[in-house]
Amino acid sequence: MCKQPLIILTGPTAVGKTSLSIKLAKKIGAQIISADSMQVYRHMDIGTAKITPSEMQGVKHYLIDEIEPTEEFNVTIFKEKALKAIEQIRNDGYIPMIVGGTGFYIQALLYDIEFEDNDADTSYRQELYQLEKEKGAVYLYEMLKNVDPKSAESIHYRNVKRVVRALEYYKQTGNRISEHNEEQRKKDSPYNYKYFVLNDIRDNLYERINKRVDIMFDKGLVNEVKNLLNMGYTKDLVSMNGIGYKEVVDYINGKYSLDETKEIIKRETRHFAKRQLTWFRREKDVTMVNYFDYDSIDDTLKYMINTLREKDIIKND
Image 1 (cartoon, rainbow, N blue to C red):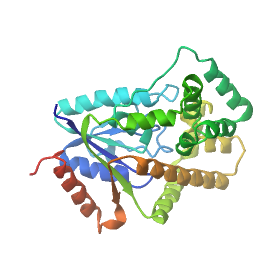
Image 2 (image 1 turned 90 degrees about the vertical axis):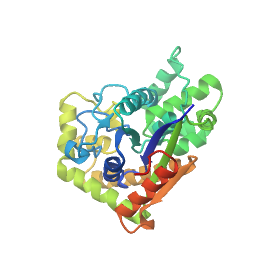
Image 3 (image 1 turned 45 degrees about the vertical axis):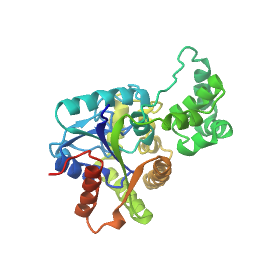
């Protein structure tokens, strides 16, 4: 059976995925599916660095502003929605391109990973969430490090949902979820794909991260968070625990000064970018696209387009 084409464009936060994806999509006739676990939420624009309609430049996007902050969104839901979007994009005569930095989502879609979700008995899950309330997220994270250190490497301690999922999987099966995912990753992909990972010199990347955080505050991140709280979205929601939102809630509640809040967000975002790169480097068949290897964005695009032609994902003009 002929494998359908799929392009993946990912990399650490603030590396420049959005602008490059628009340029590439316009040149090759692609439409974009967001693989970002935060940009899917409505009303959360500044803190997620969400692409604006004008920045889209007419390129159709899927899984942006899809759900309310109270709604559940996880890898299984992402995969289901992304598959529908891929079908629609193909039917419309375009090439599907996955753009975003949530590697776990990309992996699930690319290798058609099946997730064993045991909802029959949720007692242990509830017990873990209660532990988190009583003893904090770090306590749960230390539990995970003890039973599945490899998972702990790729999951942030504040991503309580994924920490709980990994602990629950271990409790129910006696196996590590990292080992399960590794086995699934060995599956052959149903796609004829090219997996681009953008990267830059670390100092350049960290400088962009720091500038992005400053710009977010200049654009009104504090007011965005205040509006979310006024709309009834509480800090215990998964959506409100994204980097930038949780810290601003703490600032509003008087826990930190404004300058401290900015520095914490910058630090957490830098750490997040480092974890993203660790994840992507472990993936098989990725093509690292280092900005410092090219003289210009145009040269970077030419290289990417040539590799897509070699894979027969796009045809020669």
